[in-house]
Length: 270
Image 1 (tube, one colour):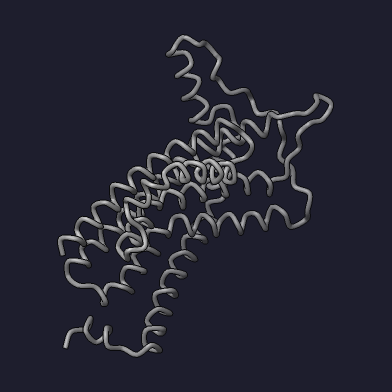
Image 2 (spheres, helix red, strand yellow):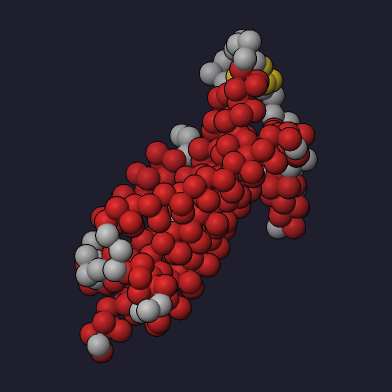
Protein backbone atom coordinates (compact mmCIF):
# COMPACT_ATOMS: atom_id res chain seq x y z
CA UNK A 1 0.00 0.00 0.00
CA UNK A 2 1.43 3.40 -1.01
CA UNK A 3 2.27 6.12 1.46
CA UNK A 4 -0.29 8.46 -0.11
CA UNK A 5 -3.02 5.84 0.25
CA UNK A 6 -2.12 5.40 3.89
CA UNK A 7 -2.38 9.14 4.41
CA UNK A 8 -5.74 9.20 2.67
CA UNK A 9 -7.06 6.54 5.08
CA UNK A 10 -5.73 8.17 8.24
CA UNK A 11 -8.07 9.21 11.03
CA UNK A 12 -8.94 12.83 11.82
CA UNK A 13 -6.41 12.95 14.66
CA UNK A 14 -3.72 11.51 12.39
CA UNK A 15 -4.45 14.27 9.87
CA UNK A 16 -4.12 16.84 12.64
CA UNK A 17 -0.74 15.37 13.56
CA UNK A 18 0.42 15.60 9.94
CA UNK A 19 -0.87 19.17 9.74
CA UNK A 20 0.99 20.03 12.93
CA UNK A 21 4.31 18.98 11.38
CA UNK A 22 3.60 21.00 8.25
CA UNK A 23 2.96 24.00 10.46
CA UNK A 24 6.12 23.28 12.46
CA UNK A 25 8.27 23.16 9.33
CA UNK A 26 6.69 26.34 7.97
CA UNK A 27 7.23 28.12 11.28
CA UNK A 28 10.83 26.92 11.42
CA UNK A 29 11.57 28.33 7.96
CA UNK A 30 9.91 31.65 8.83
CA UNK A 31 11.89 31.75 12.09
CA UNK A 32 15.21 31.17 10.31
CA UNK A 33 14.42 33.87 7.74
CA UNK A 34 13.32 36.20 10.55
CA UNK A 35 16.67 35.74 12.26
CA UNK A 36 18.46 36.44 8.96
CA UNK A 37 16.42 39.64 8.50
CA UNK A 38 17.10 40.61 12.13
CA UNK A 39 20.87 40.17 11.71
CA UNK A 40 21.04 42.12 8.46
CA UNK A 41 19.15 45.11 9.82
CA UNK A 42 21.18 47.61 7.78
CA UNK A 43 19.93 46.07 4.54
CA UNK A 44 16.40 45.61 5.88
CA UNK A 45 15.97 49.18 7.08
CA UNK A 46 18.48 51.47 5.32
CA UNK A 47 18.46 49.80 1.90
CA UNK A 48 14.85 48.58 1.73
CA UNK A 49 12.25 50.12 4.04
CA UNK A 50 13.70 53.55 4.84
CA UNK A 51 15.00 53.94 1.28
CA UNK A 52 11.58 55.30 0.26
CA UNK A 53 12.26 58.44 2.27
CA UNK A 54 15.10 59.47 -0.06
CA UNK A 55 14.46 61.33 -3.32
CA UNK A 56 17.07 58.99 -4.86
CA UNK A 57 14.72 56.02 -4.50
CA UNK A 58 14.37 54.06 -7.76
CA UNK A 59 10.69 54.91 -8.26
CA UNK A 60 11.22 58.65 -7.82
CA UNK A 61 14.11 58.60 -10.27
CA UNK A 62 11.99 56.62 -12.76
CA UNK A 63 9.17 59.17 -12.67
CA UNK A 64 11.68 62.00 -13.06
CA UNK A 65 13.29 60.38 -16.12
CA UNK A 66 9.86 59.74 -17.61
CA UNK A 67 8.94 63.38 -17.04
CA UNK A 68 12.00 64.54 -18.99
CA UNK A 69 11.34 61.94 -21.68
CA UNK A 70 7.87 63.31 -22.46
CA UNK A 71 9.11 66.90 -22.35
CA UNK A 72 7.53 67.89 -19.01
CA UNK A 73 10.82 68.87 -17.38
CA UNK A 74 10.79 68.33 -13.60
CA UNK A 75 6.98 68.13 -13.40
CA UNK A 76 6.98 64.50 -12.20
CA UNK A 77 10.24 64.70 -10.25
CA UNK A 78 9.64 64.01 -6.56
CA UNK A 79 10.67 66.58 -4.01
CA UNK A 80 12.90 65.79 -1.07
CA UNK A 81 10.61 64.42 1.60
CA UNK A 82 10.62 67.00 4.39
CA UNK A 83 9.51 65.00 7.41
CA UNK A 84 11.90 63.56 9.98
CA UNK A 85 11.64 60.14 11.59
CA UNK A 86 11.64 59.99 15.37
CA UNK A 87 11.37 57.40 18.12
CA UNK A 88 9.43 58.36 21.26
CA UNK A 89 9.57 55.22 23.40
CA UNK A 90 12.49 53.50 25.13
CA UNK A 91 11.96 50.13 23.46
CA UNK A 92 10.45 51.55 20.28
CA UNK A 93 13.31 50.85 17.88
CA UNK A 94 14.01 47.40 19.28
CA UNK A 95 10.32 46.43 19.07
CA UNK A 96 9.99 47.66 15.49
CA UNK A 97 13.19 45.78 14.64
CA UNK A 98 11.64 42.51 15.85
CA UNK A 99 8.22 43.05 14.25
CA UNK A 100 9.68 44.12 10.91
CA UNK A 101 12.03 41.13 10.89
CA UNK A 102 9.06 38.79 11.44
CA UNK A 103 7.17 40.42 8.56
CA UNK A 104 10.24 40.05 6.34
CA UNK A 105 10.51 36.38 7.39
CA UNK A 106 6.87 35.73 6.43
CA UNK A 107 7.27 37.48 3.07
CA UNK A 108 10.44 35.57 2.18
CA UNK A 109 9.01 32.31 3.47
CA UNK A 110 5.62 32.63 1.75
CA UNK A 111 6.54 30.36 -1.21
CA UNK A 112 7.62 27.64 1.23
CA UNK A 113 4.39 28.06 3.23
CA UNK A 114 2.40 27.47 0.04
CA UNK A 115 4.62 24.46 -0.67
CA UNK A 116 3.78 22.95 2.73
CA UNK A 117 0.07 23.55 2.11
CA UNK A 118 0.43 21.69 -1.19
CA UNK A 119 2.25 18.81 0.54
CA UNK A 120 -0.60 18.54 3.05
CA UNK A 121 -3.40 18.33 0.47
CA UNK A 122 -1.40 16.31 -2.09
CA UNK A 123 -2.34 12.81 -0.75
CA UNK A 124 -6.03 13.56 -1.33
CA UNK A 125 -5.48 14.58 -4.97
CA UNK A 126 -5.46 12.49 -8.11
CA UNK A 127 -2.39 12.42 -10.38
CA UNK A 128 -3.74 15.09 -12.76
CA UNK A 129 -4.85 17.27 -9.86
CA UNK A 130 -1.36 17.03 -8.33
CA UNK A 131 0.17 18.58 -11.42
CA UNK A 132 -2.34 21.43 -11.31
CA UNK A 133 -1.78 21.90 -7.58
CA UNK A 134 1.99 22.17 -8.09
CA UNK A 135 1.39 24.79 -10.78
CA UNK A 136 -0.91 26.68 -8.42
CA UNK A 137 1.75 26.75 -5.71
CA UNK A 138 4.21 28.20 -8.18
CA UNK A 139 1.65 30.66 -9.57
CA UNK A 140 0.58 31.73 -6.10
CA UNK A 141 4.17 32.44 -5.12
CA UNK A 142 4.80 34.43 -8.31
CA UNK A 143 1.58 36.45 -7.92
CA UNK A 144 2.39 37.23 -4.28
CA UNK A 145 5.91 38.40 -5.11
CA UNK A 146 4.67 40.52 -8.03
CA UNK A 147 2.13 42.11 -5.69
CA UNK A 148 4.82 42.76 -3.07
CA UNK A 149 7.12 44.37 -5.65
CA UNK A 150 4.28 46.44 -7.10
CA UNK A 151 3.25 47.66 -3.67
CA UNK A 152 6.82 48.41 -2.62
CA UNK A 153 8.00 50.18 -5.78
CA UNK A 154 4.83 52.02 -6.81
CA UNK A 155 1.94 52.26 -4.34
CA UNK A 156 3.90 52.65 -1.11
CA UNK A 157 6.45 55.30 -2.23
CA UNK A 158 3.73 57.51 -3.73
CA UNK A 159 1.82 57.27 -0.46
CA UNK A 160 4.95 58.14 1.52
CA UNK A 161 5.65 61.06 -0.81
CA UNK A 162 2.11 62.43 -0.50
CA UNK A 163 1.66 61.98 3.24
CA UNK A 164 5.23 62.96 4.12
CA UNK A 165 5.05 66.29 2.30
CA UNK A 166 1.43 67.11 3.10
CA UNK A 167 0.95 70.12 5.37
CA UNK A 168 -2.14 71.97 6.51
CA UNK A 169 0.11 74.91 7.31
CA UNK A 170 3.79 75.76 6.98
CA UNK A 171 3.78 76.44 10.72
CA UNK A 172 3.29 72.71 11.37
CA UNK A 173 6.27 70.46 10.67
CA UNK A 174 5.98 66.73 10.11
CA UNK A 175 7.77 64.59 12.67
CA UNK A 176 6.64 61.03 12.10
CA UNK A 177 7.34 58.12 14.41
CA UNK A 178 9.37 55.26 13.00
CA UNK A 179 6.53 52.91 13.92
CA UNK A 180 4.00 54.92 11.88
CA UNK A 181 6.29 55.08 8.84
CA UNK A 182 7.18 51.38 8.78
CA UNK A 183 3.59 50.38 9.52
CA UNK A 184 2.42 52.36 6.48
CA UNK A 185 5.04 50.88 4.16
CA UNK A 186 4.63 47.26 5.31
CA UNK A 187 0.82 47.34 5.45
CA UNK A 188 0.47 48.70 1.92
CA UNK A 189 3.11 46.33 0.54
CA UNK A 190 1.65 43.22 2.20
CA UNK A 191 -1.90 44.18 1.22
CA UNK A 192 -0.83 44.44 -2.42
CA UNK A 193 0.82 41.01 -2.20
CA UNK A 194 -2.36 39.44 -0.83
CA UNK A 195 -4.65 41.25 -3.29
CA UNK A 196 -2.65 39.86 -6.21
CA UNK A 197 -3.72 36.36 -5.09
CA UNK A 198 -7.19 37.09 -6.52
CA UNK A 199 -6.80 34.79 -9.58
CA UNK A 200 -5.80 31.92 -7.29
CA UNK A 201 -8.82 32.49 -5.03
CA UNK A 202 -11.12 32.64 -8.05
CA UNK A 203 -9.66 29.36 -9.32
CA UNK A 204 -10.51 27.51 -6.09
CA UNK A 205 -13.99 29.06 -5.83
CA UNK A 206 -14.70 28.14 -9.46
CA UNK A 207 -13.34 24.64 -8.84
CA UNK A 208 -15.82 24.15 -6.00
CA UNK A 209 -18.69 25.61 -8.01
CA UNK A 210 -19.15 28.63 -5.75
CA UNK A 211 -18.18 31.07 -8.52
CA UNK A 212 -18.89 31.20 -12.24
CA UNK A 213 -17.69 33.51 -15.03
CA UNK A 214 -21.30 34.52 -15.68
CA UNK A 215 -21.65 35.67 -12.08
CA UNK A 216 -18.42 37.68 -12.29
CA UNK A 217 -19.49 39.31 -15.57
CA UNK A 218 -22.96 40.11 -14.21
CA UNK A 219 -21.53 41.87 -11.16
CA UNK A 220 -18.58 43.51 -12.93
CA UNK A 221 -19.86 47.02 -12.13
CA UNK A 222 -20.24 46.07 -8.48
CA UNK A 223 -16.70 44.67 -8.54
CA UNK A 224 -15.40 48.01 -9.82
CA UNK A 225 -17.02 49.81 -6.89
CA UNK A 226 -15.62 47.24 -4.44
CA UNK A 227 -12.20 47.62 -6.07
CA UNK A 228 -12.30 51.40 -5.59
CA UNK A 229 -13.32 50.97 -1.96
CA UNK A 230 -10.62 48.36 -1.39
CA UNK A 231 -8.00 50.63 -2.97
CA UNK A 232 -9.12 53.48 -0.73
CA UNK A 233 -8.83 51.25 2.35
CA UNK A 234 -5.39 49.88 1.48
CA UNK A 235 -3.87 53.18 0.38
CA UNK A 236 -3.86 56.54 2.17
CA UNK A 237 -6.11 59.40 0.90
CA UNK A 238 -3.90 59.88 -2.13
CA UNK A 239 -5.68 59.73 -5.49
CA UNK A 240 -2.57 58.71 -7.45
CA UNK A 241 -1.92 55.72 -5.16
CA UNK A 242 -5.56 54.65 -5.30
CA UNK A 243 -5.67 54.80 -9.10
CA UNK A 244 -2.32 53.01 -9.30
CA UNK A 245 -3.71 50.11 -7.25
CA UNK A 246 -7.15 50.12 -8.87
CA UNK A 247 -5.83 49.57 -12.41
CA UNK A 248 -4.01 46.25 -11.72
CA UNK A 249 -6.94 45.09 -9.58
CA UNK A 250 -9.34 45.58 -12.48
CA UNK A 251 -6.91 43.78 -14.80
CA UNK A 252 -6.66 40.91 -12.31
CA UNK A 253 -10.45 40.77 -12.11
CA UNK A 254 -10.78 40.40 -15.88
CA UNK A 255 -8.02 37.79 -15.86
CA UNK A 256 -9.84 35.95 -13.07
CA UNK A 257 -12.99 35.82 -15.23
CA UNK A 258 -10.94 34.09 -17.90
CA UNK A 259 -9.57 31.61 -15.34
CA UNK A 260 -13.07 30.89 -14.02
CA UNK A 261 -14.25 30.33 -17.58
CA UNK A 262 -11.51 27.76 -18.20
CA UNK A 263 -12.28 25.91 -14.96
CA UNK A 264 -16.02 25.76 -15.63
CA UNK A 265 -15.48 24.73 -19.25
CA UNK A 266 -13.22 21.88 -18.17
CA UNK A 267 -15.72 20.77 -15.54
CA UNK A 268 -18.53 20.72 -18.11
CA UNK A 269 -16.48 18.45 -20.38
CA UNK A 270 -16.07 15.95 -17.57
